[in-house]
Amino acid sequence: MQEERFPYLFEQYYHKKASAAEVEELMNLIHSGGFDQKLQEQIDWHYKNFKPVQSPFSSIQEDRILHTVLNVKTPAKQMKIAGAKKLWTRLSIAASIVLCMGISFYAYQTYSYKKGQELAASLIGPGTHKARLVLSNGQVILLDTLKNGSQTLEAGIQITKTKDGQLIYKINDQQGRNASLINTIETPRGGQYQVQLPDGTAVWLNAASSLKYSGAFKDKKREVTLSGEAYFEVAHRANQPFLVHTQNQVVEVLGTHFNINAYPDEETQVTTLLQGMVKTSSKSKALILKPGQQSVLNQKRAELKMEEADTETVMAWKNGDFIFKDEDLASVMKKVERWYDVDVVFQDVDPKTIKLGGWVSRSKNISAVIKIIEPIAGIQIKIEGRRVTVMK
Image 1 (cartoon, rainbow, N blue to C red):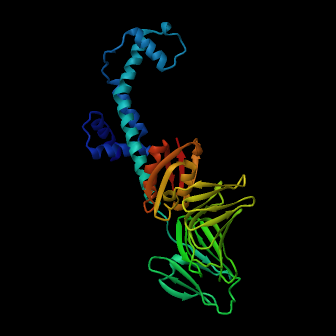
Image 2: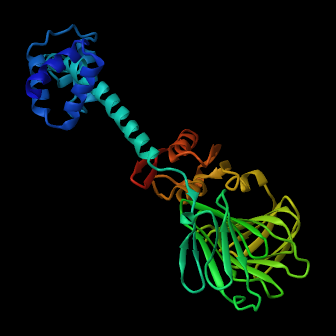
Image 3: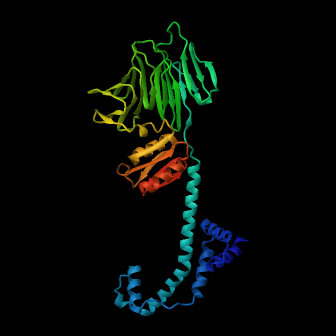
């Protein structure tokens, strides 16, 4: 049936009489690759029955054009005009058939590609509230699967999951049996979570992050260890400072609001103070931060310096947004990797040299982010499963 219908569809299309449904049907048949022979037959028939048109160029101009376009090695003055006339006829056919089919088929392929990419992007949703709690005894609890309400885990430990997804962690340990036990809360790529520690300190964990902390803060210092990014609202205890350990750095506070970005695969660790006062220390230097300031630790050179902070950009992740301000593409795509749980590769693109800015909600699918990035950065993004290729 399709073998007989193909010539009809081709003629309808060639004479610009095809309906939208017929155009789509023809393009699908061509795109399938099963009708190459039929397509060749249609082109050959039109060639044999083609009515020559008068060339708009002189014979000399034809020779020059054909010599240039076809990259003929023989000097133009040695070419035979008759041969040029015959070739002009073939080029006329190409203009009437191949050009017509080619442009439309290219447009169709582009349309199909874009639709396919939109579909692939729509399947990659934003991150959600999910994490796992690893207790000191090795027990693993998937926090996003817990029902709302309170439950007791191991001796003296009680967690409560609120309606908004927050995890409140309490210790009922009168004899201090759990003081030395270390628990870990971990968020995967594509996840974030909020937890309230035993002292009342609230912590928001960004994607691909982990926080280790004691089962109870009984010592002179409250100490936690962070990998990744987290925002802290530390409960004030005048005689018990709160310490956050990251790789090559310690942040010390008494009671304050601050954000730490300390991903292992980043060149820098950035501590941003919003309220109160903190002290950041590296192996060679210590800085006291005031609200609106941030410390930047270069992990390769072990250099610690102070800068004024753009708190809107720093806190965008916690507030449910992506905000990019003159940020390089490498940094932007790392955030995309973590939040959408994808693998990003660069093809013939140096992401460090491309700067961009923009805003988009983190609640949107990855397609919304791509639509922001592509035109600003002047790149193309291809999605195959969870592989994201950035190319020129």
